[in-house]
Image (tube, rainbow, N blue to C red):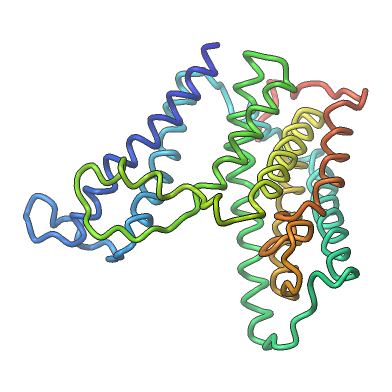
Length: 302
């Protein structure tokens, strides 16, 4: 259980550290005191959640090196980054799978009049959409798959059956997406990072779509972990994740909702129950099909 405990310490440490540091950074940005004024160069924002999120990101990234050393990860290859030559095809297959699956679901919302095409898109918006979508697909695909599948899932399955590890990593992956609120906090004190944290949690009470979205995010996490396990590298899971992002953002760009029933979702294709059957079938097949692939060989390099 050493690896599981290390992950728990890493998660608790990142959030606790962000809660401690964020108020200091916020005060430093607006302070005239010499002790804190060195932070004045940072762009000022009244939104405290921005400081918390950025401190959390910085600590999460820097903490990976410590987690790497504690868990004795010997190379990037252990995180699925095997030699790209000869393994590039899964990346393309993954993108196609991601695009096809969510495009099929988006098409259903159009057929049943849950969404309709926008008619107010300007030419300049297409260029900006393409740049933003491609950038998000690449960055989020690489970063989240390396963190959640390569690191988190990879370490958990050292301590337990890989399907159990996939389930736990999927739950964590889905839960992180619900730290999404942006509360307005009038007074910042040294303890604000801890006292304000509950306000960062998703507003479940006023969101009828949350259960569908949470269920679909868990299924997505299971699919990506299963693909990582079956292929023995990270490329196909990055491709699927990137394909999903492209499909989601393009659907949101080209269409808008006219029926926000929980069946169809509201802001995303993935926050309605319409997406659940297909994602469930994909997850079941990947987790329980008889095909098994060998673990990546440790002598390969990126």
